Length: 385
Image 1 (cartoon, helix red, strand yellow):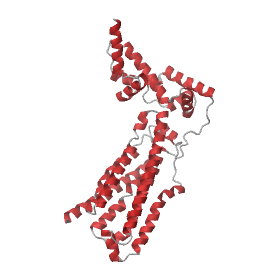
Image 2: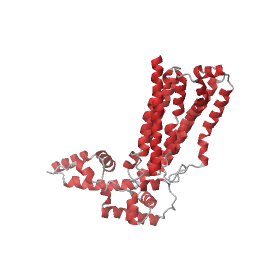
Image 3: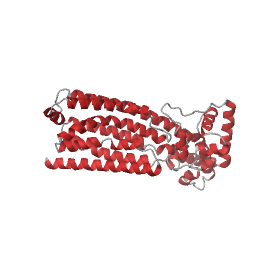
Image 4: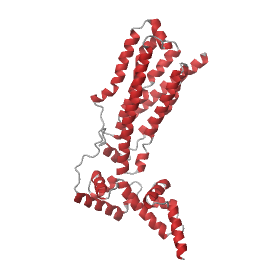
């Protein structure tokens, strides 16, 4: 048993040092890149009071537990609000932390007051009994209240984050490409990992053994390392600042477009100019092409192109570009059937970044895969001969 407690003690100390190291890294990034990393730092360090509590629990430092316990009880309710603010800020470079956002942390503040008031009214023997066995009067009610608030937060904030990500995904795919959105799939993975960790922690806590003092650490370190790596390697920081500038218009109220609606004649003119530019310049063959590139070239805004294509063509920029790419691919396949056109090389020649993206676009537009298309041409040629 002594060795087991020693291992738990080491795990918790290492966890604290590791998370503090990640926080220092974010502070360094903030200082050098002037990035807003405060929400990320809160997300990463929010579990440190838990690990301090575990250390005091294992070493039976009950007096120290008395001071850290209210923080341990309440900081869990700060995690999801901080995660939401961090994700929102990740896509919005102009986002600022206003005082109104402090309301997100109000439940944590209430729990802190309740827990502090309850512990301080207990005698020292009752406090030790509460920390170790949780069988003092009102102990179950206190823990139950915290659990209810935590589950409520999970439902509310997960709904907000997923709905927001859905809107961001639609916006990026509409104005840029699916590849731009794929860079952000780490965020839904984080949510899945958090859910799994929460379920495992509940199971471990219900067993009333020491498993809850080290299980969170393992998952937390993995999740926070993954979170730090992806949030600090955002594609919206250097190479693609134009995307960041555009996404600042995505707010929680989903006010994506602030421009005036185009008239039908204006929409038709912009739609024609856009498609003509794509064809004449063959810019659609550029895998890195964005709607902003085209907008700058023809002298209109991103939003005006999106409105025009949606109004006149009932389509979006990505679909229009992919149609032009597939038209070129179909022409190349039809002309070079005897030369056994290499599909992999054609993928990149047509402006796609991967074979999978090429096949998916080809199937959506032509109703068949490139291989099936080649087989049909071959069969038609044989029947003619």
